[in-house]
Image (cartoon, rainbow, N blue to C red; front, side, top):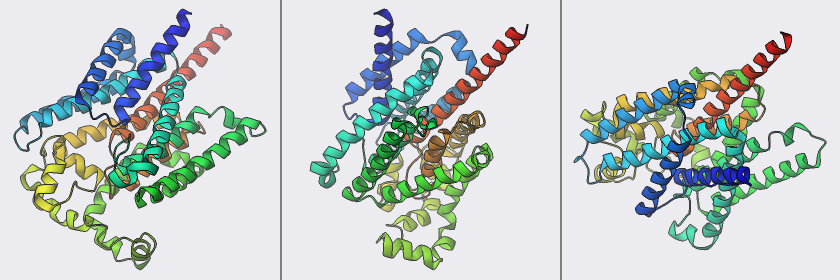
Amino acid sequence: MNNRLKVSVYTIFEMLVYSLAFADIRNNILKYGLIVLVGIFLLSKLSHELLLQNRMFNILVAGFTVVSLLISFQSCGVTNRNPLLANIVFCSIFIEFVLMAEVISERKGIQHFLKTASICAIILCVVTDILAFTVGANKGIYLIGTKFQVVYHHILAIALYMMFNKDAMENRKSRKYYIICLTLIGMFIVTIIVSLQIDCSTGIIGTIVFLAFVWLISLNRDFFAKPIVFLGAVLLGFWFMWGYEAILNNQHIVALITVYLQRSISLTGRTIIYTEMAKIMNDHWLLGFGYGSSYEICRSQIGFADTQNALMEWIMQIGIIGSVCLIIVLIYAFSKSKNLKNEKQWIWLAGYIYTLIFIGTVEITYTMYFFAVLVLIYVLGVEVRRRGNECIDQCDFTCL
């Protein structure tokens, strides 16, 4: 009875952390209350040994948090929004997701967290889809957030579902294997249908790109598991802002945009944003305008909602200094892929990461979705390494 109670408590707080990270909680009192509640729970479960096991990653996360908070503090007054408060909320949720993953990995095994996350993802997708086919498509009312986040969450649900069912996928002769395959096909079809319903061409492209990356990574895991490849992809996505003209001179790409996607050659105004971005940043390249400032700055100066580029969005908020700190955290997390490249289902998480990097050339994708999956890759990598060391120790003991 006591063990069941403990499992239920862990599951409840896993669901709370997941909701904080991905659900669109618009009531600030409720959001702040959940952050405090989860924080109290984590403080009761953290141990000195656990923090030491992950000390380098935790130090990097803490360093990024301090730098971004200091930058946001000095940016107070630049916009009407309080960047410090907004950054405190973001960093609190990010840190709680990191610590929850570390605690669950040590106490229950990360598979426990993946199960809860997979269930939460599917529930949020189902509820959001109901809203999308009733009132959401016309009024922009979604449980998850914007129409782009709706699509990202559907693809995330697919990745988590496959990660959770990795053991069942090993036996191709079992009935469960075929059930999972049919479910997977159904989830992809639903993602495409929902993307059409909410008029999100990015969702259709993202779903296709996700499948392509999963296939490519399965062919060459060693290449895609390299941190330098991850960093190169991130920087290449940023370069698109400055090199888009060379790409748009290609007739096939122009045809894809104008004929098949039925969008303007300006990429729905993105080329205008990219042209003006250097002028907007001017003296703010190093420290940015403060966390959460993008909407107000872009809207007032160029009439658009954001920078329409994943890395540029962070540079605008916390500058090059803060963004470099963030990238260091992300690279370190991704570096644990070296322990996972032989795990067949790692390709789904890696595929999701590279998909968001690809879409991030023209959208804001370096959000909690991106960070959370990298945290899962980190914790999974640490757990696999720990299991390997335990097997070696056990073998040595047996030999003695």
